Length: 145
Image 1 (spheres, rainbow, N blue to C red):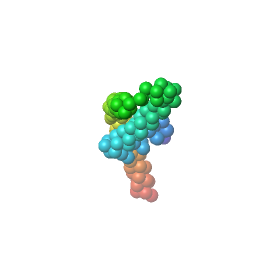
Image 2 (cartoon, helix red, strand yellow; image 1 turned 30 degrees about the vertical axis):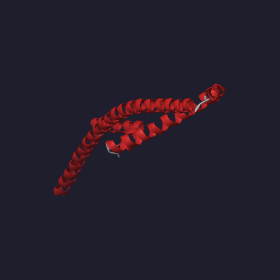
Image 3 (tube, rainbow, N blue to C red; image 1 turned 60 degrees about the horizontal axis):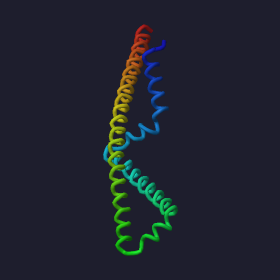
Image 4 (tube, one colour; image 1 turned 135 degrees about the vertical axis):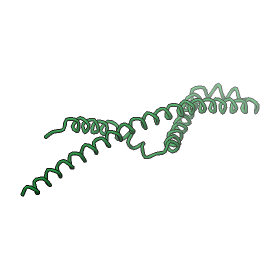
């Protein structure tokens, strides 16, 4: 005897596990603070690496002009200050965006996992009812013998 509700629920759970196992189920191991720390560190390294690569490419393209314009120590210090200021502003903006993005993503993951766990509990109750029905049938069969 097939239980359609159980089959639908098991299919739904299986599809969720196949689709979101790496993304969401693994993320459930973390507290929000740990998840955010890992994602923010990754974002920090990415923005730093990206800035360095862009700076290197820019410097390679404009190296003649930059070196020629650095005739005094004041201009060199000014260039360093401008580069650091651009880096700080860029990093702050990117980190703010990353925090908002990953915070929203974590809330979405938690919501999906809450629904997933609720479906697991429902499936567990359905299976317990089926097992109880089987045990009752077996006990009635023993009483008739």
